[in-house]
Image (cartoon, rainbow, N blue to C red):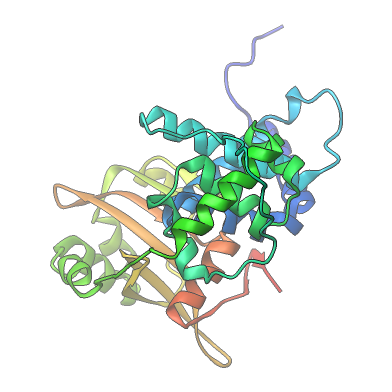
Length: 313
């Protein structure tokens, strides 16, 4: 028998079918998981990265299971928390331990804090304290479940919630967007990309990419060269929408806007990396429902819910 030395399209398509079924199975928990990742990392951008890694790992771990997963939310949050703690350890960051206090434990069950404040918890508490607070007080796991996710004890979880409540009142945050956008507007390559995109000039836009550029639409597709882009995602040309620059959560981005029946709608969010005058990396969040919905809320622009092959209605 001739050995298989390549990954055929049949394998790719079958894997894609199983992945899509997995996505449907966990869809009820996607929003909570994304918010948890955002809060535990302290940033929507880092949270999106953690969310993507969590989904990839959660799907990849399935062949290692001996029994079926009966609590999907617990499983997803467990993988997310383990992944985040591992990342912190790799960065030599003190993850903390959840000590059990000797005094009577006060039960905090009524969350009183604004979403805008929660994303800054990361700089005031250890990763495990942040996770304990979020799991118990915001996402409504009980102490035993939170302890299992954190590999701790119920008493340690309660104690961490106490510490979180004592520290959270002192959080202060400010943002400055004008300087970030000003720096972005000076990038000649990005400005040329915008001009070509808005003029529907595909050839002009492609000239801005390096031959080895990576093009990735998270949970949609990956392309590892300009040739693959031409044969793949760009084979039908540009979408005919308008691209504009924005600052989204302290990061300059390109927002692709479509004209909906009731006004402008976010079609896509893009990030580019430029080296030596060429785009070497192009990232798209076209398929990322939770991310685009959160960005729409942040920017006060509606999200486009129907955009083939996506239908989020």
